[in-house]
Amino acid sequence: QVRLVQSGPEVKKPGASVKVSCQASGYTFADYDFTWVRQAPGQGLEWVGWVSTSDVKANYAHDLQGRVTLTTDTATKTAFLELRSLRSVDTATYFCAREGNYFYSGMDVWGQGTTVTVSS
Amino acid sequence: IVMTQSPLSLPVTPGEPASISCRSSQSLLHSSGHNYLDWYVQKPGHSPQLLIYLASNRASGVPDRFSGSGSGTDFTLEISRVEAEDVGVYYCMEALQTPSAFGGGTRVEIK
Image 1: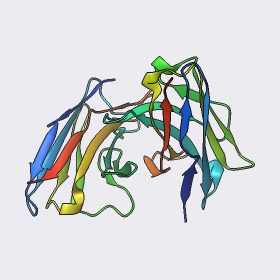
Image 2: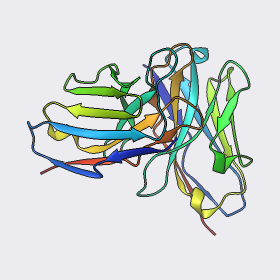
Image 3: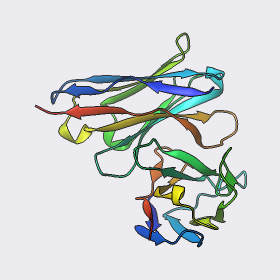
Image 4: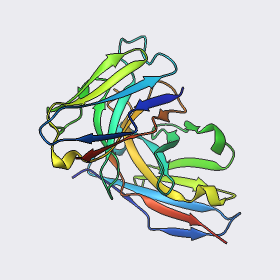
């Protein structure tokens, strides 16, 4: 069964950092890249970034450049999102999703989401 | 690229058809001939799920009452006969370039 299981909810103070994980199972990790999407409370979906599982390439949303880093660990079949210098506007549910890296076929499997709350 | 969806809200009667429009500020037609436009639905309390990729390809397990069409900058998601389980927020997303962009969403609700 193909699954993406994300880490649990986080509560952070402004200025802190958070690292969210997304563990894959049930498929060949290297055949898919990861996209991260976030959703502020009551709002729509916002594309955060994309990371390759086969090399060190990553692309980020313009307004998060410099604060976000996406990585993957092939040994543990896990993707990570790290967001630094947290602000209240970063309060959101963060989703990981896989995306085929040979032939594009959309983001076909999603994690359950990780709630990140930034509050003093 | 800016993605614009309409309508914002769509009350539908079960068994009736429904249609959602998505317009992009730039053409999503790739040199390969594919339009890099996806449709996702987020049902209440759940993660988003893929419905359509490359404008008109149904994802695995998606009922055939869902269909996608369009090319260039104008795209449409159609539900031939709405069912109660189709309630949720529908998003289009351009996948031609990064950073990618989602439309604002269309909330489908049962009348």
